[in-house]
Image (cartoon, rainbow, N blue to C red):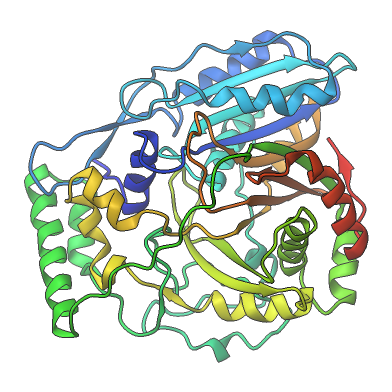
Length: 469
């Protein structure tokens, strides 16, 4: 069977109440009403597609949990007509009762808009997929309606087709990417490990706990006994290497901001892509660094007191379209004096840095420890003041639902049942479809009532003109 990755396991623990609960959500709007029969057809395709799976336990100590196919699904959720200002409030409520283990882990919902059109939401547990995986599932289901290929979302690096993929080993030096117009890494880069959330201590050199190729091949479709042997081999060898280099460092911790007064507030903005790209070019930046600069300045405009903002930057690491958590994370520090151009340089350098496992130990150790121990070892890792996730260019399959045109599409994360706030104050998710950029913002700060003013101020200072959903 296919097995859970370290990242999958971390999100499984958040589902179990250890950490910040996260569900992924894709939102798309059509300019006319969708027929219930069409929505049921999409629901049926999703039910038998890549999201149709659940987590099952292993019977042998040390073996990883696995994926089992399932056609169980929440019924198609058809809501009452919505006014446009109520769309995000409605969408924020759709993450409840998603269970990647014992119940359906995803839900398809739709509601007509009072002004005409329909809004559709696909919400799934982060255990099942990351944002690009969710987009792939949607694009596949929509493409099957017309018999067209789904394609795949393009990363910002895909748009920079001049850059060749580097060899897998040895690590590629930063000077290999001398084109300063690009700061995102190419797909398949070995300069990023695929564990997104263990502590982000930057380091160069060999990755601890790297699994030999013959063991990686063994793990995909094997017995629990074989997987346990492979896991323990990796863990013991990696731990021995770490100990030979000295006692492991404890993972860095970043205390969460106090929760009193904090609230979740969602906003979705659209921007003219040509204008956005022109402003980025005029400032010596890229669309991605302009995005990071904007999110940081929104947080400052909304009352963030510190002179430096730590930004968490997820990076897609998949080499083919699939519904999986296949990402890595790096970070940069942003000062008030930074411009989109200086952020471009910082991000470009950061994307070449590796990420260490907790305390220098092999990342697989998180899969054999009891859940509460593993959570304590990785608690708060990957959380910074802001999260800037550039999802990239969405597939053309998302432009239509059957015969209906999609005028707006967004992807984001929501936090169902959140009781303890993380360090993260503001999360931004940028995507492009056609001639439009869409920025979904999720604020976790103590000033939700001033967020809209902060957005307007930061956009005005940056020179971009937002349109609110």
